[in-house]
Image 1 (cartoon, helix red, strand yellow):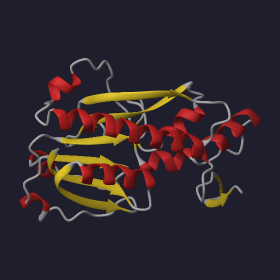
Image 2 (image 1 turned 30 degrees about the vertical axis):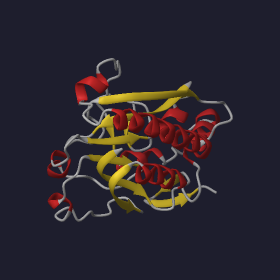
Image 3 (image 1 turned 45 degrees about the vertical axis):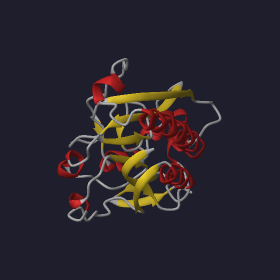
Length: 225
């Protein structure tokens, strides 16, 4: 059984809800904060007054302060929807466009920088030729949930498991480039001179729900349907 847990998840996400349920069943004290959009502000002053043993982040949009992370007894763990060679946002988009054969998810300790803390575990799986952004994200979130439960079960057995012990056999390192939302928005733009092959790749790597690629003509944006 875990002690005091603070969990950051995402609104209307079935995988966040499943991990939330698992953590609630295995924590003496459980607190939950959910986010619903990028750049949503988190009021952290009240949280800093709490005694927290563990923080877990799963698909959360919140950016945690260094003070809140340091205030946690055993550390804060994030589950990143991408392998370490894709930091930041847009990991599945870039992987599909680059015709990567494998994708994955990364569990890591959190620090003051985005996707840069010590890596705990990387779960990898094959990308199928039939995959698009939606199917790849669904697979990733499923694997993230399995990864989360596996790691949390290890911590339940040994709550004092420290960063060096849990990461001692890990061979992965984060890449230097951090992809921002600005980078992803730029990636969605299609060059009007692109060839048919690259257009097909870009369409596969960008279309999901209301998110679609666009072209710009004289500073006017035209969304491709």
